[in-house]
Length: 143
Image 1 (cartoon, one colour):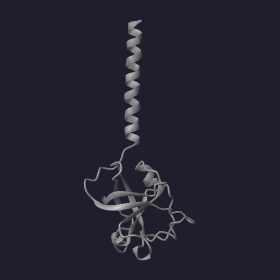
Image 2 (image 1 turned 30 degrees about the horizontal axis):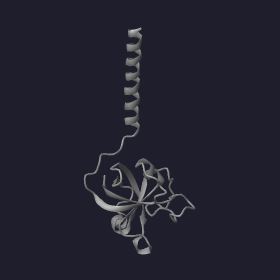
Image 3 (image 1 turned 90 degrees about the vertical axis):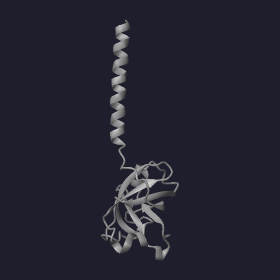
Image 4 (image 1 turned 60 degrees about the vertical axis):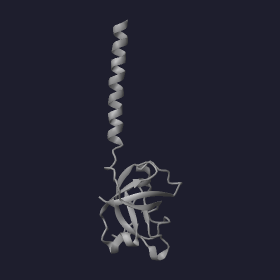
């Protein structure tokens, strides 16, 4: 009887270790960014007909909100020099970090503040944030 309990406990420990490592692999995040530029992350719709406006400035296309993508304020967008570049975004709320591709400009000359990292719902989800919040402090850097 004691050996049956021991076998059961050993099997449970092995199963727990396997599931923990699978979860760790599934929730892999980009390397944490120790510094970066402080900014405000907002949620944006990049699909046709959403509040994000027209097609993306970098390629003239609409993008899926399931893609890890971002629009940067005019000064950070830098005349398109960051188009299709990867940036690293870290939430100041929970410390999680992800990478996203710049596809658009958040035009600071037409209503967008100059410290905005405007991202898809996929970025919010990957950071473990609720899109209903709408605005969170972040740091970002070129990846």
